[in-house]
Image (cartoon, rainbow, N blue to C red):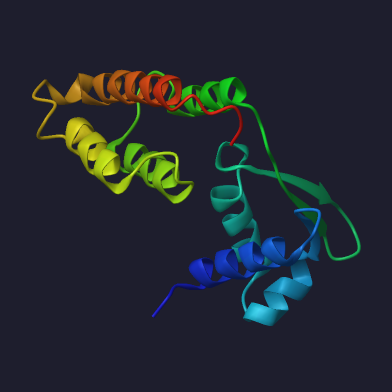
Length: 158
């Protein structure tokens, strides 16, 4: 059975697909009532699954139940690469790195085969160094792969 967060995410993405202008306005309390959950659960989904690096811009308005505008963004390749590199930072956990790779697969930026190779490269078993520097090495590997992929694919916009 899907978790409530997954259901909320799917619901919002379906609303965005149906929207002609790729933006929607929702009311946090109404959505929480619809899913029979706390408004904080809606906030959690928005802050973790609808971020700029995932292609979404969130505008929040206070009062009146908390209106939220979600906009699906379209940014050029260089901006996108810079956002991903910034998200990775100087070090990154295996779990967060895999989430970025999964996102690239979901957006069809990389193939399933490329996903498998990237995950193998950033796996703890592949990085045979002391634990205190694994996340730094993983970040450098992931950043190098992302820059290489975007240069190779030659994408103009995402």
